[in-house]
Length: 347
Picture 1 (tube, rainbow, N blue to C red):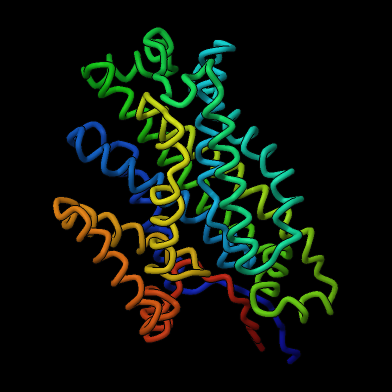
Picture 2: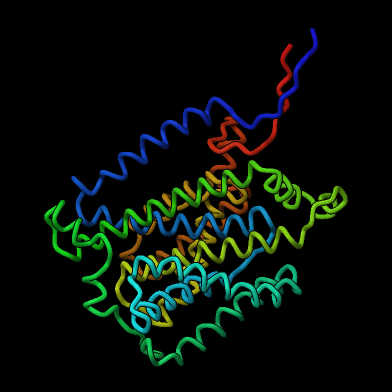
């Protein structure tokens, strides 16, 4: 009998985790019906940081583009949301899409510049671009200039879905906005993880993995490295811009220093990915949970909190270079989001 050969990425652990993820997603959707407002705000923070971490991981973990300037897209996307609302009268929810579009448009000239650099020069180049964008936006007087601005009260009252949430959950408008922002963050995080996982399972995803493993070998088999870098850079900018717009929509106020904070939107994101495991989808998920609980545990200790985060990051890089998830996966062989191709032979 002739043998049949199929290439698969499916594992039993992935099937179980997929079912569990769907159940968890369903629970997360209805969670605002019985959860406290503080829990909803905490989950919003986790989901938005997870989204930022997944996009940075896509850049650095799969394409080798170690950017320390992702705050450029967070801040620019957020500022364009405020600009669209204040100057053009766009509903804030619809303006979220514009946050991603304008971040993508910013990424095009940025890529032309930083792709001429490599290694540490690339990282520094992205940070320089972010600082240029911050200084430029600080001169935009229509959205508050260097001091920033808040969303107009009438714009906040007109946000799609808030009035409906007020009626259904019997909450004040501020709590209703938190619930709406949480649902949007949940959709964004789920879409990001699903989209990245789906992309990595395609032929282009296989090409991206080849670039991560060996650039020259990938080029030798026909992978267009430059094109793949462009695709990933633009996609990451688009998603990061939307996340930035959503973060400051929920906040209700924006300023150049907060929107372009390298510590908040890049350093912490890098910490999340490094701690969890770079080059895996599971890594940022684990990393953001570790980061959140450390932040809650140590936030009252001021500078000591940052010192502990730094020491922990150094320790993980020294003793578990592939992160906590990489250490776990190596010992157990479990992959919740498997992308490695396996040849299945049946007779």
